[in-house]
Every structure is written in structure tokens, then in C-alpha cells.
Amino acid sequence: MSEHAPSQRADLEKAVRTYGGCWDTGRGLRALRDAGHEPQEKHTRRILRDLASEGLLVKVEDRPVRYQVAQSD
Image (cartoon, rainbow, N blue to C red; front, top):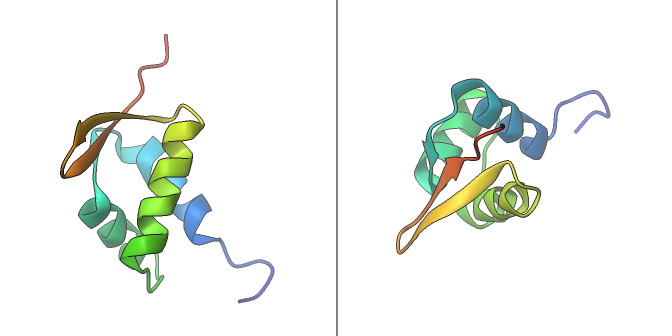
């Protein structure tokens, strides 16, 4: 990958910030495919967990795992 090509993480974070709402692995995979990536489920789940640990997403369901975009007050 060229150093100027956006990372999957950056593209998924951008999609989450742009579209908001609920996120799960399937939606993350679709967003990454739409951005031109060939994502893997495991990596997509890791990105979603990272975004949650940074406070952008909040886990709202455990099985299946779903996240909601955190409200910024």
C-alpha cells in the first residue's frame, strides 16, 4: 500500500463519523468495501473495538456485538 493510501482504520472512522448510527461487523465490512478495501472480519472487529475504546463508539449489544456512535455533548 502506498504511504498516501488511506488506512482501513481511517476510512472506517470517517464512515462512522459521517453516517453515525449503529455499527456492527457487517456494516463495517460494507463501509470498507465501499472505500475500496478488501477487509477481513477479524480486522474490522478490531477496528470497531479500537474506536469504542477511544470513545467514538459505545457497545450496546454483546451478541451479536453492536455499537452506537457516542453522543458528543
